[in-house]
Length: 105
Image (cartoon, rainbow, N blue to C red; front, top):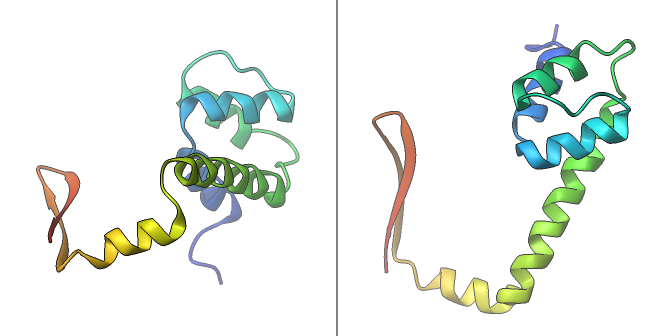
Protein backbone atom coordinates (compact mmCIF):
# COMPACT_ATOMS: atom_id res chain seq x y z
CA UNK A 1 0.00 0.00 0.00
CA UNK A 2 1.51 3.37 -1.00
CA UNK A 3 2.38 5.85 1.69
CA UNK A 4 0.56 8.68 -0.13
CA UNK A 5 -2.35 8.67 -2.54
CA UNK A 6 -1.94 9.90 -6.11
CA UNK A 7 -3.98 12.99 -5.18
CA UNK A 8 -1.65 13.78 -2.26
CA UNK A 9 1.40 13.39 -4.51
CA UNK A 10 -0.21 15.66 -7.12
CA UNK A 11 -0.93 18.22 -4.38
CA UNK A 12 2.76 18.21 -3.34
CA UNK A 13 3.87 18.62 -6.95
CA UNK A 14 1.44 21.47 -7.59
CA UNK A 15 2.55 23.25 -4.42
CA UNK A 16 6.13 23.18 -5.69
CA UNK A 17 5.16 25.35 -8.68
CA UNK A 18 5.36 29.14 -8.42
CA UNK A 19 2.06 30.99 -8.76
CA UNK A 20 2.89 32.52 -12.15
CA UNK A 21 3.79 29.14 -13.64
CA UNK A 22 0.82 27.48 -11.93
CA UNK A 23 -1.48 29.84 -13.83
CA UNK A 24 0.09 28.74 -17.13
CA UNK A 25 -0.44 25.08 -16.18
CA UNK A 26 -4.06 25.80 -15.26
CA UNK A 27 -4.61 27.51 -18.59
CA UNK A 28 -3.04 24.50 -20.38
CA UNK A 29 -5.43 22.23 -18.47
CA UNK A 30 -8.39 24.39 -19.49
CA UNK A 31 -9.36 25.60 -16.02
CA UNK A 32 -9.73 29.09 -14.59
CA UNK A 33 -6.56 30.96 -13.72
CA UNK A 34 -8.38 33.38 -11.42
CA UNK A 35 -7.74 33.48 -7.68
CA UNK A 36 -4.85 32.52 -5.47
CA UNK A 37 -2.41 29.69 -6.09
CA UNK A 38 -4.23 27.67 -3.42
CA UNK A 39 -7.54 28.14 -5.27
CA UNK A 40 -5.99 27.08 -8.57
CA UNK A 41 -4.48 23.98 -6.95
CA UNK A 42 -7.86 23.15 -5.43
CA UNK A 43 -9.51 23.37 -8.86
CA UNK A 44 -6.84 21.13 -10.41
CA UNK A 45 -7.24 18.59 -7.61
CA UNK A 46 -11.02 18.61 -8.10
CA UNK A 47 -10.74 17.88 -11.84
CA UNK A 48 -12.55 14.74 -12.96
CA UNK A 49 -10.71 12.83 -14.18
CA UNK A 50 -7.45 13.92 -12.59
CA UNK A 51 -4.92 15.26 -15.10
CA UNK A 52 -2.47 12.53 -16.14
CA UNK A 53 0.64 12.52 -13.95
CA UNK A 54 2.95 12.95 -16.92
CA UNK A 55 1.36 16.31 -17.84
CA UNK A 56 2.26 17.83 -14.46
CA UNK A 57 5.64 16.06 -14.37
CA UNK A 58 6.54 17.24 -17.88
CA UNK A 59 5.48 20.79 -17.02
CA UNK A 60 7.66 20.82 -13.89
CA UNK A 61 10.58 19.42 -15.91
CA UNK A 62 10.14 22.17 -18.51
CA UNK A 63 10.27 24.82 -15.77
CA UNK A 64 13.52 23.37 -14.44
CA UNK A 65 15.02 23.03 -17.94
CA UNK A 66 14.30 26.73 -18.48
CA UNK A 67 15.80 27.60 -15.09
CA UNK A 68 18.94 25.58 -15.89
CA UNK A 69 19.27 27.30 -19.26
CA UNK A 70 19.01 30.74 -17.62
CA UNK A 71 21.68 29.70 -15.09
CA UNK A 72 23.94 28.44 -17.90
CA UNK A 73 23.77 31.88 -19.48
CA UNK A 74 25.30 33.26 -16.26
CA UNK A 75 27.85 30.52 -15.50
CA UNK A 76 28.84 27.34 -17.32
CA UNK A 77 28.52 23.91 -15.73
CA UNK A 78 32.32 23.59 -15.48
CA UNK A 79 32.72 27.02 -13.87
CA UNK A 80 29.90 26.25 -11.42
CA UNK A 81 31.50 22.94 -10.46
CA UNK A 82 34.83 24.72 -10.01
CA UNK A 83 33.27 27.29 -7.68
CA UNK A 84 31.43 24.61 -5.70
CA UNK A 85 34.64 22.64 -5.24
CA UNK A 86 36.05 25.63 -3.31
CA UNK A 87 33.46 25.18 -0.54
CA UNK A 88 35.13 23.50 2.46
CA UNK A 89 32.05 22.80 4.56
CA UNK A 90 28.33 22.92 4.03
CA UNK A 91 25.67 22.45 6.69
CA UNK A 92 21.87 22.57 6.59
CA UNK A 93 19.71 23.79 9.42
CA UNK A 94 16.56 25.62 10.36
CA UNK A 95 15.93 28.81 12.23
CA UNK A 96 12.50 29.96 13.33
CA UNK A 97 10.83 27.59 10.90
CA UNK A 98 12.85 28.78 7.90
CA UNK A 99 15.35 26.63 6.06
CA UNK A 100 18.81 28.05 5.61
CA UNK A 101 22.26 26.78 4.86
CA UNK A 102 25.72 28.04 5.55
CA UNK A 103 28.96 27.39 3.81
CA UNK A 104 32.52 28.25 4.59
CA UNK A 105 35.10 28.40 1.87
